[in-house]
Figure 1 (tube, one colour):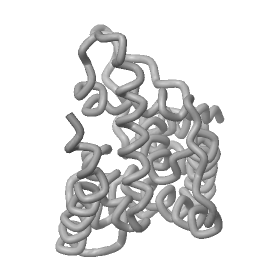
Figure 2 (cartoon, helix red, strand yellow):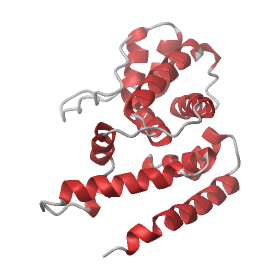
Figure 3 (cartoon, one colour):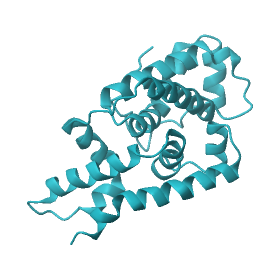
Length: 209
């Protein structure tokens, strides 16, 4: 069972067959077909990795936690009853594992230049803000990412997670509520508060000419 979190899944060619249905893949994986579970891993590994990375701000931690999440999900697959989509169930496992990890890691995370490069490449909104091809582009991008990352890490874990799932992963309020185990009103409240806090943390930087 291959679980390489840092390599993107290959793009589907126009003449390629239609991707397998998620329910069919889950059913086959529950029967012990590793090829089916590998397909599920490839389908969701980038989104799971990105979510954990934005929560931990550390490339290696995100890679380890993503692999651990997929392994735990495979081990618990027979307990998956299908009441929600597989990827929502998988997100819940990854989120819980990440929150537990963050509780154990009280010291501030170290952010490497490699982490900044990865994050910049996978956040099109950040790239678009400094997309002009100027000699200062790389420096401006790194500085902006550092400020955003620092502001994000100042949020509580629940507020940070709400922002990551909604604004980075593009999940709907209903899906986030299911992942976080709360109601939609709580999700909206956390998003509102988190965005206010991010704006406050970034206000001085955004005022700079």
